[in-house]
Image (cartoon, rainbow, N blue to C red; front, side, top):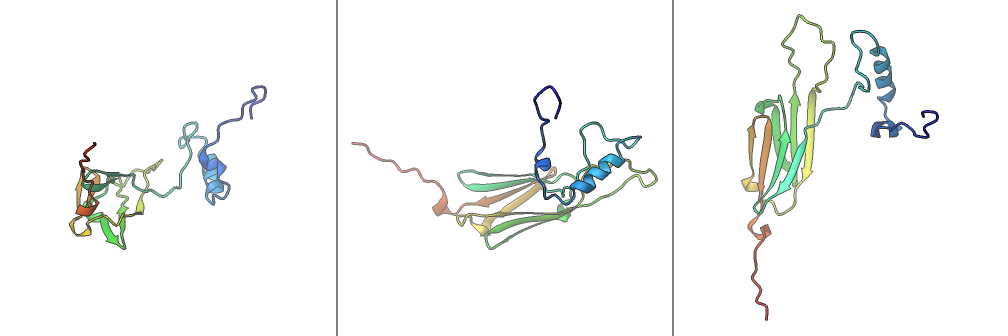
Length: 158
């Protein structure tokens, strides 16, 4: 807390979490790399969080659509399954160092396996699901069953 201002510094959500097993390790790394050519710019921290693709889910009149951002991932490294009305997206972002003779000073991209699962409504027609992978974005269209699609009913007002 700064003296004289009466204001406390703003804390991030991570600072409010007291049961973070990597917090002490992260603080040590930040102190270790705090000076010299490997220094982090002010306010930056090493992050040990596992990578997980960002996903958007939205509904149209005919479909439920799931879009996942998968930059740098090949189609062959992605697996999409539906089991017990749960859509699961699994894959792996592989570390491929093109510069083998140079040392890395900093690697900020996350690598490794990931998995995202979403419970589907029972109104999805599982036999007609289709997916497209283009420009690092996976789009999954889950068509609604006919009985689940919105219907316009005209009501005569007297």
